[in-house]
Amino acid sequence: MDEFSLIRTIFQRPELTTAGGQLDMGIGDDCALVPLSSEHQLVQSIDTLVADVHFPAGGDPFLIGYRSLAVSVSDLAAMGATPHSFFLALTLPEADTKWLEQFSNGLAAMAKEAGISLAGGDTTCGPLTISVHVQGFVPKGRALMRSGGKPGDLIYVSGHTGEACAALPYILNQRAVTTKAEQKLVDRYWQPTPRIKLGQWLLEHGATAAIDISDGLAGDLGHILKASGCGAELNSSRVPISPELKETCGEWALDKALCGGDDYELCFCWPAGKAIPSDIPVTARNLGFMTDRSEQFLIDGQDVSNFCAGSYRHF
Amino acid sequence: MDEFSLIRTIFQRPELTTAGGQLDMGIGDDCALVPLSSEHQLVQSIDTLVADVHFPAGGDPFLIGYRSLAVSVSDLAAMGATPHSFFLALTLPEADTKWLEQFSNGLAAMAKEAGISLAGGDTTCGPLTISVHVQGFVPKGRALMRSGGKPGDLIYVSGHTGEACAALPYILNQRAVTTKAEQKLVDRYWQPTPRIKLGQWLLEHGATAAIDISDGLAGDLGHILKASGCGAELNSSRVPISPELKETCGEWALDKALCGGDDYELCFCWPAGKAIPSDIPVTARNLGFMTDRSEQFLIDGQDVSNFCAGSYRHF
Image (cartoon, rainbow over all chains, first blue to last red; front, side, top):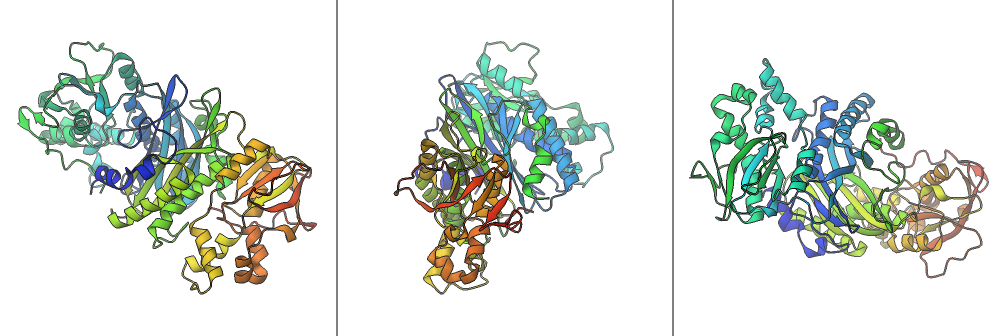
């Protein structure tokens, strides 16, 4: 059973989801929304990284700390939120002070970049596991959701996709880094860029839907299609492939860019005919468009609705 | 290095704690406070339970679920908060549907009891680890803190302490349960009672400080003494020992009641001369009193400031 079905069937039950305080949105999107003042909503998300599942246990602790916070902050970016604070639940086999200091330096570097404060945490002894709970604010009712896409909307992507996935053989020490291109992929794996400012700009200027790419461009666009009740047609020649990905992966570059996870770029829907200024960091402009054919996913006219079933899924 | 020093030295740095949104209180108490509307503050906490460290991996999944949420909700009770919602970060070795359903039933039972909604989560594959982030609300500026105790205040405790600790040999299958008394201790370990209503009553009626007992009555009272800059004198004959604890542990009962962790009862400071109605579930009335001798801890006149150094500490 994949993560989505699992959470739905086991946890999305009224006894759990409506047992107490009212939520504007709970399970089912990148973040939960808690109604607060008359002007804002609190946006919150939690993510766990497990050693040797989501990152190599022997990795540089600075980079592990940096990446742990970055992947959670990315969920706030996908909602257009302004980051506020986070909680850290850190389980580790021993209290290795040097490791912890470097880990904490990495956290601090990302915290500064994102403008987010550590608000609390718990440190326990056990197999290395890192859970980060993040929260931020959006103007009430304005959060970017997966469900707002409409037929005719254009599909855009920030940055380049597929790079983190292409880095895996180097991260796992199956291959040695010998070129600048390979090093760039490795850097993108360890230090993804949560698109906070882009998310806020999109919220302010009328994007209809957004998601951050953790499961792969095709897989995450699939989440938008499902939530929005739309289909999509993509033009593969517009998929954002970096020169470094092309150099390293050759003919597999498109496959990585479409299905590789862990990039934490934003994929979003944008009303057709509305311009995006050239200084907004959107690499793939008009990658394709949304259709009214529910969940039908075409690339270059070919039905690939199940094409990326192999993209990263928990379990 | 114990948990408290570890968190302080590694994480309580301005680059982390003041990198973004303003907090009324961050690291250092049971919960963090986030300023929100003009009337309320959000109270939040995260706790992790690791299999075979904090509970036996082979335990009843219903009870694991129940207890996981209860121990986090107890932090809200200690602040006098009204529970609102929680996030679950669940790492488990395989997607065992039956286990997950029972776990979820246990969560739901506690969620109903506490009036708290599941707001989101993350499920990952790895060694069984459970992190729960909880949040609730308090009237602004009214949260019960560890730091409010004053010389002359009386010290009170809810319920009975030491029972969860005394249950460990049975929980760990080192001994078989053969008496009703032993079964009651085991039940208290698995199904602690977060004292939510008591916490709210204490907030409303003027308790000066409170903490939930996770590290042991003496250890947690020590946290109040440190935060409040006070000392305390306890009368051991007033320590709340249940008949079941007495029957099972005999001459060790007082030791368990003073130093055993995991009870999740509330210990609090109360202004002398102010009555607590008899229907408020406080077992140990006037267990002792606060003094102006900073962190000096006397029991029956004997200095035991380091008496419970062996009480439960992470690492």
